[in-house]
Image: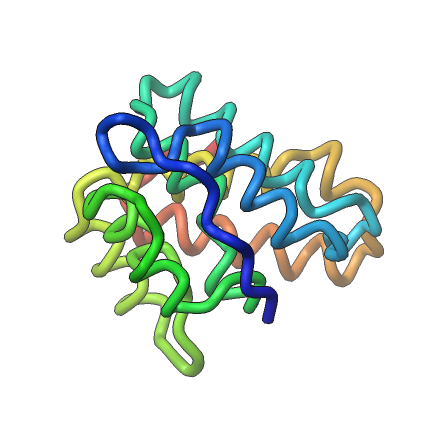
Length: 160
């Protein structure tokens, strides 16, 4: 797990969006996705997806950090101590899957946390992008397509 130094905060006492992006990029720098692409491409796509869906800076920050704790790129302690809004932290925690957690419980937490659904919707949209899935072997593509469809259904999101 990487412990990333705390960048400077804005006059409002929270990290700037540029600093959040830099922290996320540094924390995930050595990771790749299932297709072998730099993981930061996924984070960037989710952040842009949140922006395109009308998300504000707090939700865009959560998008940049949405997998950080789950992937052990940053610790829960880092998140707690980071100069982020309570809303951003709550959304990151809501979209962080917990070991052994049933999908229904995960979906319920997302639905109960204001803003989390928007971040998860952008995450699922990028994960389920046909071009992204096309480079995977058939078994993996089928498994992930079903997994993402099930989560969309649990969240009440229309199919792509």
